[in-house]
Image (cartoon, rainbow, N blue to C red; front, side, top):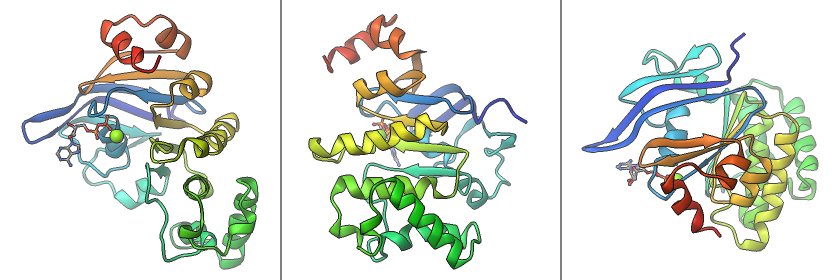
Length: 244
Ligand code: ADP
Ligand code: MG
């Protein structure tokens, strides 16, 4: 067994001339919750996308458990079936019911039968407080409810790792809390989570480690109390000052 769920070793990624990730080293332990913070454009989304094999890297290695997922021979579908992902918005299939959104991957990727998949979806919807929305289409749900379904869907397959990219950024402020409460629940349950977020109070409260990304490098990282309470780097201080 590997001691880490995820390990990035000297990961580089550029778009044209622009180096967006510049030598990222990051290890995530089982059950750890890592908050990625940093200015817009610092590379948070790109980092998460490389892990889900949505962006090929130029150099370095990425390990998911014992699998070198940066090996070009690796099958992207097999890797993605081990990772749950939720983005800022447009996560759900609009033409499918909430229930079908959740059962789809269970049936077709994880090969559960209809009965089992339906039972799993029902249990999950119950857990996220949306049992009564099973037959609704996503456009009938609030943004907060949609994100709760998206998170339920992402964890339905019991992924080894959950990637969250600013899952509350597109929400009206009054809907943010219900989504963060669900993330907190999953964290309490031992889910391994890497999340890009601007919710500093939440990161401080829930994350085991805060990683400050600055122009494609990890400039500073540590327990939330240290990074938020006594940042070592001037640029971290300047970034955090914007949230005070
Ligand atoms: P963050 O999520 O921290 O805001 P991103 O990872 O989205 O940062 O972006 C980092 C940098 O990479 C930005 O300058 C962005 O414009 C650039 N970038 C991201 N995706 C692409 C792409 N597909 N093509 C070109 N540039 C991109
Ligand atoms: Mg982003």
